[in-house]
Image (cartoon, rainbow, N blue to C red; front, side, top):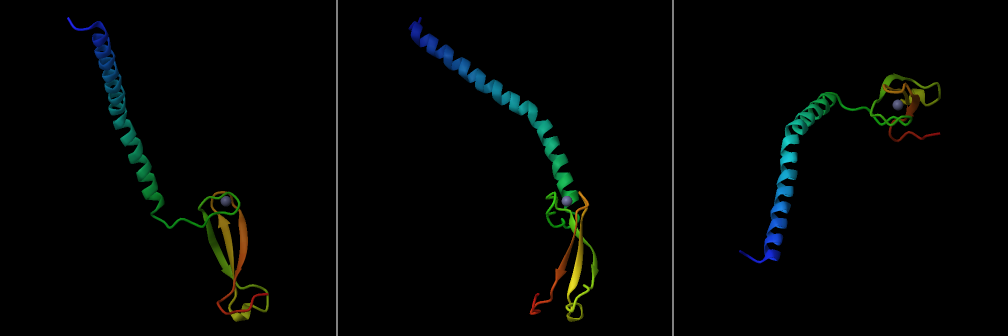
Length: 108
Ligand SMILES: [Zn+2]
């Protein structure tokens, strides 16, 4: 029979190993659920990337800010090629008109 202290130490080590084994087993058991969840999330991201994401909406932040229409501005810059881009957010309906000036055009 060994030293009692030595046997207690061995017992604690065995309990530690059993604890580690139990934690690993819990991780292994949850792996199939986590993999299925990740597959769903990857498929959703892939479907979103079928189209180029819109710009960041200045109001809500969603990547759904897109140009809906292009018009000529009512200003002297119109005949020089300036354009008005009518932006609309597909998430929150925020609208904004931005004037685009061709390169080398003096801006007012
Ligand atoms: Zn928005």
